[in-house]
Structures are given as C-alpha cells and as structure tokens.
Length: 235
Image (cartoon, rainbow, N blue to C red; front, side, top):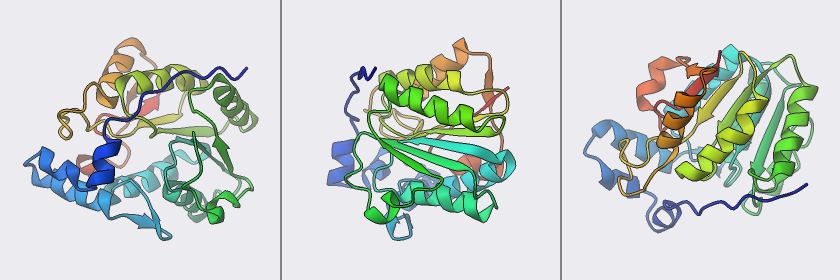
C-alpha cells in the first residue's frame, strides 16, 4: 500500500532560496555565525551539502564508533550528503554497508550519484509513505544484527518530524543511532519565527519513549552542531 501522508512545506525553504545567509540575522551569537556560514559554503565532491563542517566531522566519528551496516537518510537535496555518507563507509572500511537515501524528488541529484548502485539505494518517494517505510524496514532486517544510523533531514516542522519519528523509530533496536537534523530552528537559537519544529518534535518524542537517550559521541564537536539535542542512541 502506498498511502501518502501529507507533508507541510518547510517554512525556511523560501528564505534560503532568496538568501542562503538568512540564518545569520537571527542571532547575535558568534558561534552560530560560524556554523551558519559553513553551512552555506560547504561542498562535497563539488555538490552542495547542507551540513556544517563540525557536524560532518561528528558524523564521521559516529560512523567509526557505530560501524553501521545501514545508514538511512531522509532528504537528499543535491546529493552531497549521500556521497559524503558513502565515502565515510568506504574510508572506514565498511564497503558492504548500505546507504539508503530517500527524497520525494531526485531531480536535483546528479547522475554521478544516482548511478552509484551497489550496495547503495536511492528511493524517490515520500519518506512518510507507508510503502517507503516498509521497504526501508526490509533493507534494515536483511542486514541485522548490524547497527543502523537513521538521519532525519527532510522537512523540519514539528508535525513532519513527529510523523518521521513515529514511522521510523520502530525499525530501530538496541545500539542503533538516530540524528534529528536542524533542531536549532524556532529560536534554538535560529529562525525564531519558524514555528514548532524538529526541536519540539524531539522533546515530545523523548518524553514518551524511554528507549532513547542523548548520544554523546563526538561531543568535542557538539557545541557547533545544527542539531542540538538531536543526537540520540537507542538503549
């Protein structure tokens, strides 16, 4: 069954299209000026990657520690993050581990990324469609008992992230990791006029699911993350 759950348009999209440095007007904190400038200027293999340098280093450390057999990412944009995660797996001598990237449209992803098939997979479908969740679940089960790294980086409204957490966290088991991206929205501390966002979704989720705890992997880079309180581990 492919029942699509409606998803909201990200309120930050238009602002980013008009001015990629828009974040910088939202806080006087110099730390966040550094983060937002690197977010706007980061590329991987020439492809835009909407992650700051510090988060990328933290992801590398997380993958080194976790040794995942599957990485699942919702939201690909230009495909830069897909290549980054694939390269991390190769660099850390995990060539048989699977990267699964999901996006409603792969129009912005170049053919050089789309043609990297084995063992990786790109799914062009709504990440909230039940068919998508079922397919990802099958991929995860086929590679158990290895660990899973789940990265939620699609739409960042509270409603959307809450649905992602509801649908995908049942696929996770003890020792798996979860990163909810862009919990800095809605005044935490940027985009103060965004409205309820990923931060609020994580707060609500953590209050109702005792299986997860905050993950301190790569904490030396943690204060420069775009995902404060969004790095979680399944106990």
